[in-house]
Length: 595
Image (cartoon, rainbow, N blue to C red; front, top):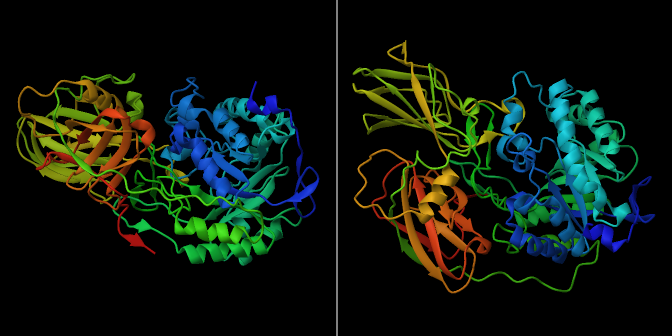
């Protein structure tokens, strides 16, 4: 029995002629986006409470299909994926909930939330009325709705709205597909109102709408103009900006995006003054822990950074910002706001940890179901059945050297000959070739830096794509060896120190250190002085770091450290650091700001 069912306090939520109606009375939705899969479960309750203290009455979340089902048929709704527990915490705080199960979510999340096994299916027709795709989506949605349906408001739970697809008008115009999603949703017992969301242009609102779902908009400026556009396509019922963009995301090699608290608050006030409902995207962004960041490619591939702070009102650590208090002041003009004013945390502990190489073979650890393969052409990550970030490709040069050319590298490659580094190739820089010296063994270490989360590049293959040639002659007989980053970090956490200085000159280089804390606290790991790689604390993969910036620190949640002994592991790809130290600093550094 869920907490909702146990409460027995069933209520009604409907769409009226001009308003949302809660138990028959006009109700304004004041919501904030909070993705359970981007926040440590031990911090869910705190983040939800902070939303209520800002004056919000609702929490919105996407559902990330690929987090719940990374491998086909292996559904997981526990731990980080316990959507039911998250919704129960929303209810316990006295708040409502909006659920957006996609199946596509974008969200700057790996593959837009679609599982790699799905997008790798031959001839799959993504986000349209294609038989195989609809079958998989139907199974997925039924699993989600088994969790959501008993937690609807008319059954005593918090859920008041469920969204169909996500900004579909920006992608396609297959109305039959949207109609299928509506039927599946209703057949699964979802009785609360259904919505769609699109940017308020004529084409997107037209192509993204479907009978039986209320239209909402996504925008962050020119609120009055965009509400008017939305009203043309939704002539009755409440107006709602279901994604009010109050910040923005960052990508490696860019700047840290911020928006003026005053300007954002003024736009919010325009929305509320017009009588509209709102969902802040984001209220609290959280973190792309592990390997979950997405990427954009509109002519140039740009992977998203580990932090998803988003310049949101509640920052990555969970502290209220100037924007939080500016929004709180605006909301107080239109709705009750709790008297309690949340405090800002003090500085995090500052200290340094010496790290040293450990005795662990990167290619000998658990490969999570993937194994080395030998093939004429380099197999892709998908052909390897591989979900982590690194694959080492090797072949015999036969003593030759020359111009080495790749069909495509997705996404970054480090090239060595006979164990000596000779260069790197970057997809972002549109590189596909370099000269290599004569030698025997060619090794190409490829990092998948994040799967595109938007538009037509959804589900593209990763690894070395197409033939690899040396002076225009194809190289054959490749061995491809997956290197599981998370497993490597766990193995290094418990491994013995290296008996001798490492002799390899090519990555990954694995270093470990230990530190003690009086109590579990939030930390900020400083990545200055390191090149490119991954950081692991107590076996938990924090995510990626890169000297390319803008992000210069990684957030370490208090929930993954402990009072007493702790371990940090750095998996470095670029270079052996000259000063083998990991520093923890007092505050985050997300890079130079772009106002």
